[in-house]
Figure 1 (tube, helix red, strand yellow):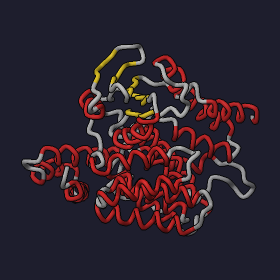
Figure 2 (cartoon, helix red, strand yellow):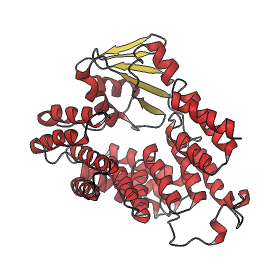
Figure 3 (tube, rainbow, N blue to C red):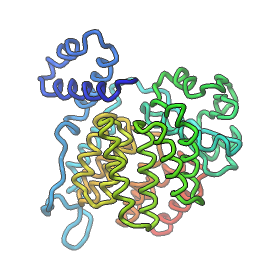
Figure 4 (cartoon, rainbow, N blue to C red):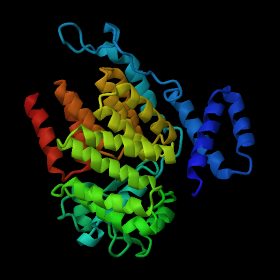
Length: 398
């Protein structure tokens, strides 16, 4: 959509205006404000309904405080965990966990992207960027272990339900049923098959350099400087592509995390600022910007960015996870735990929120809860060795 930034801005204006009205007047307002624009109505209606089920979680969030009174801590002065202090947070968690029960559950899809040569290695990350989180219960799996190359291994190792082979463009269920072969545009075929809308692709003139950058960025053996050089080449050809600016910011943040100096974090912030100027409501930019603020220690700013992201896209599990991390950074444990529940409700088939919450429980020596989360990780990705090690560690510590 060429006018996507304007559409995003209009969408949020309509949503905010609707949420200020009494419940009985919202539908009438949406019909009037979105007259002759079915897409705007559907998108606005989805967000307004979601916010109603959340009980105002997003529209009036519990923002962070500079200092926390004893009443919001989860331990007493002796460091002993007090479950009663989590009641308010868990009430929100129960609401979040059940927020989709009143709607028809979509088919659970765990789509493994398999490649057979280096030529398509970068392409699978492009597919992941375009398809991840486009709807609830739709998970993209990228096997880092190249031994995952068959339907059987995709199922047994990754817990996949479907496999997309980029080289041939074939989509197959793990029981061997072929759904389509679309070598020219596999993403478009996936959109049609699952009734979803992918994010726009990078323009053709910059696409090859973008893929090269993605391949280098996700190859841990490569210096992220090489990825950044490829993204810079792509930006010379299409300087207004927000996907390229976000990718460049990822490479710059990776250089900072590798210990190459604060200047790289500052450069990432500059890249993200430009991306948000070009498209203020681009969710991947907002989520990464929230992570940038977390790296900078600016928890309040991170919270604002991430709340905006999940308000725009309530099914974005990565945004919810980062928001939970922000609350933990401010010692607001009950809000963090409720937000982890929101991440799980957004994408129940993703193992990441269970892994992150389990790691928090492990750090707090809450072994039973950590064991529960790590057990779920192992069920979702049964062949992942790190998940098995995490579970074994907390079992032995109990």
